[in-house]
Length: 267
Image (cartoon, rainbow, N blue to C red):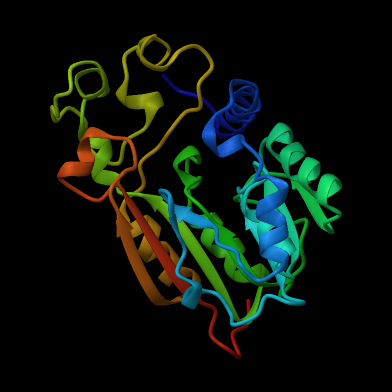
């Protein structure tokens, strides 16, 4: 199977629009009680799995900071960070995901901007536009990620922070049929993995249903090395088991990085 990068973006946009209709857990907006607590200073957001990001990874105060929630629609992280005092922009490929953020903003009187776009192309934003980029586990749906890091570096102000979550690429070596349907871990795929190149015709639809998002593994060279190559300095690292996968007993399923754009950096 082959498919152009633009067609992958379009397919995954439509797929995530449908995920909103199906009630995927990452499309369900936070309730008003969560927003009220965030306004009172009691807030948290997730970057990987279900564990809150350590508060030490954030600035002491978000008040007045410009935050880009990158490929982070769904009415969850963006509204919470807005209620905590940040000026938030949410960019996502899925209009329906962005609509979830807009619903929370209208319901709770939040000032929050939404932008439809590809995480690899942040040309809607000028250089040095944000103090923080919050990028949860979403580049698994992107064919290439080095542009994500370069663009994140460009739009961050010197001294700004990138918080990124991503999948452990080793998860993708296993046969999904054996893992999901038989509870077995059977090594099948070489890395880096792509749904488009590693599955037989029709297999993706048989396993996951019609029109589901396409996924890609990305090497740690692309994930971590890509951040370093873009100019970032890594200042934090975390890992967690996958929250609902057989592999959780054997390996971490998620990684998270905290990275800084050095003061004095130029794009």
